[in-house]
Image 1: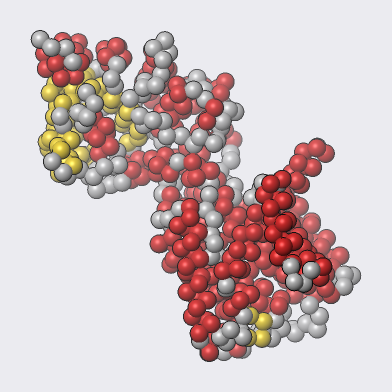
Image 2 (image 1 turned 45 degrees about the horizontal axis):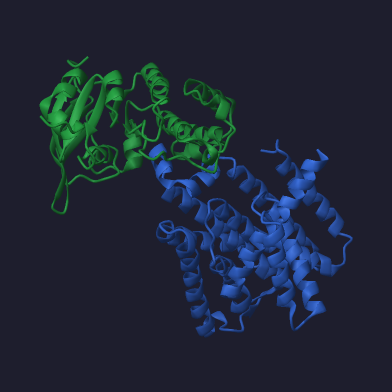
Length: 252
Length: 311
């Protein structure tokens, strides 16, 4: 898998906030189909990295090339149009709408770009796609419930489901399991990862839970003070001295 | 476009009104003309309101539409009702399009008050400019329809009703499109809308321009119905407030609501004035409070409730 040419190439990516260096010349290549776990302590620069790739934050320097297109200088919308999507640490959904309405509007926007936005939204094709997504993300039983009454877990599922309706080639998930109970976390990730596998999406996800990292990722990037201190397979990464010290917090 | 019940109701209701009004006394026809003219502006505010935006300055576009008619009439001698209407819509729409570049970046109270500011600038300019009639305004000649000068107001009423019907059906269609459905979504979470790949700024710009065109059309029709324009009844901030009042009175539930709400307002104001010429605002204000307390969804929510009970 790794010998294919990378679809995401990050070169010398730098972000500073005054004297704070949130990204210190980061270099990463991500190949198609990889599932990359991004780990690190609070303030290590993980979310900052995700924000830069998805156009939410403008880097101070460096480049991010996705399938040959430079992403630096593009905003969230343009990045989405390029084929990159994301979920959020705190789920970003439409809380006064039902689950189905959330998905419907997401699907409609994904399908009706440009002048097509002036076409009537409701259609049988849209409904069929909507129920397909509801089924794959196990959201059927909640479809007519307003999001504001739903649990964190369901909101997170919806958040991710909405991120993939635009059929991205890369999906960045920011702490998908935060706010989800210990008992539910594996079930949750099973639903998400199997749905994503079907779509053959390359996934980068930020995660604090090492059990999740061990179980689901093919490669780990460990961040510390804006730098990558480890880039290796999960079993090796979790045993790595630096990772143990700076990410997991065990002293040797 | 005519499959849904709303469009059908607009079509049949409108045609029935046109037929009935033929036998109605003049004062009733007048009330309908004023009500339906204003309702176009309410229709525009409804589009904005659904997205969580309230403008306290749409008298700007209303006034632009009305004064365009006055200038067309007095300076250029244009009498055709449609040319005057199109003139009002185009000028107001263009102004809305230009201002939209600034206003699409603001929300809530800032959006509301910036609109007021803009409208008061125009008010100030017109009040101070003799050539634009200053505080007195202008009298406007009765419009011609397809080259014929009608002897009664009935033909103008028919034209206004047909335009109101067309607008209601078009806005109803617009509300079903993807961008038209982007209402609660924008109100709830703009970041998500951007990450889904839709520009919130452009969506709001479109809605804003649409509301400006409709308010301009409303002003143009109102000017022709009244036969005069003056800054206090066309551009002053009280007119903007009145438009917001009628929007809340009507409710955002359906494109028919602005027409009912606007008519109710017209009747309410007339009778309140007759009953208490010195304190008619008191009656209007009390009605407003009652609506906010008991019918937060406006008059339309009452109609919708009755509809559900019957079905």
